[in-house]
Length: 394
Image 1 (cartoon, rainbow, N blue to C red):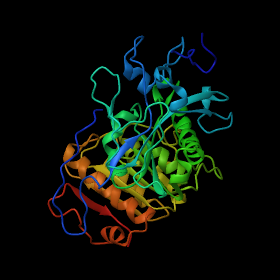
Image 2: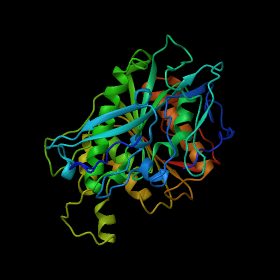
Image 3: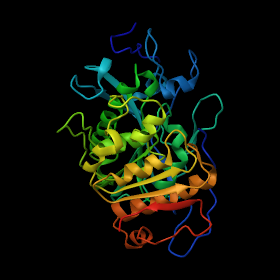
């Protein structure tokens, strides 16, 4: 049985090995941080009616959408929130008035004495392992139970899922951040416009949830929150940083709790030149043109932004990432990864993770050494690095 939101009645990437430290000049910290990493509960049943990836990414179908919450063994032990889509929310479309479940997972610094076993998610390949995962009835074990940690929330690419991003988020957690990943389930939405609308709502709801959750509220510093996005997740983060659509003057979806944003191959729409090259007619109003032609709506972004692009990326051209950053009203950095397409190799990922940690250390922790790494003329990753700084504030 299904309802008008396309939901079905409830049914009872690859995690890379830790990346080797890369030699770099003094002051540049490369590789994993000093902390072991623990994770929230994501105990699941093996998928039987369809491949597990259909649940992880989401799948829209007339008889009822598939989504990860349908595989969860113990809902009370798992971070599952219900996100209501207001009728007047931009991009609501056919989801207007619906309430959809969204699954979250949290990674956090944990003590070396944490002996909880890793958990292998029951998907076809058995690749995805959540480190020191809590089981039902267990609470997080933080490296310092008295500390309040900065938080970084992550929005993945279109039709990806949180397990693909474990390596990235473990890297930040090992550096002393609490990280929250949002399983958007893009594939269960009826169109791209609806998925974009649900994404920004889901990130806001996820922050509301973890900041009030009894397991996390006393361990998060609510004044030190950042957001990171990959590909289409960059669009989500830029929207929450205040990026506006010139076609809707006066409307802002900014979340003021987010102090800084990072994007890996971040999609922000297309420049007018790129649109012409693709045959998109002038004046077209497309679902993904959220910030207007030539990214004019990004002038409203005043908070710090750091983007990493791929030199050979055809999905999100490096020239567009640079143009979007130049359109912003606040400080922006762009690093371009030599020879990389939309998917980075291990070396480029490692350098991206290190730039990300340095950026958040500078803007969430106020770390002076990290700020020095971002100054004009700095080349902290060294002359042999894949990443080349293309833009930084004067």
